[in-house]
Length: 116
Image (cartoon, rainbow, N blue to C red; front, side, top):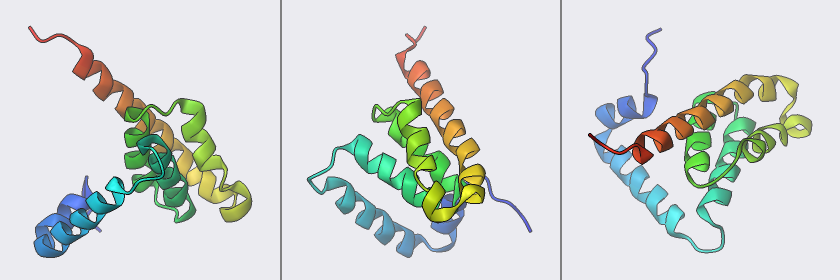
């Protein structure tokens, strides 16, 4: 089975109209009041962990870090699933969460570096 680096890019390519509508739904959800962006992303990390989606965990951990979440908060969002989804789920998703955290830090460092 061929692994695509970014499955959502494949979804966009294969189902452009559906992908666009999905992205519109996500934008509406992001605009809902009540929770700040960091909290929303930490909830997404927890949900992606519960559904055993390491790629989703990585993506949302990056977004959470960019929104101000620290390592403890991101790890906490993953491990809160221990009693609900089990140790295997946490073990599958924790490396992805830490990878996402590092990606967010690298992006932040690049954006803070003055250009030559």
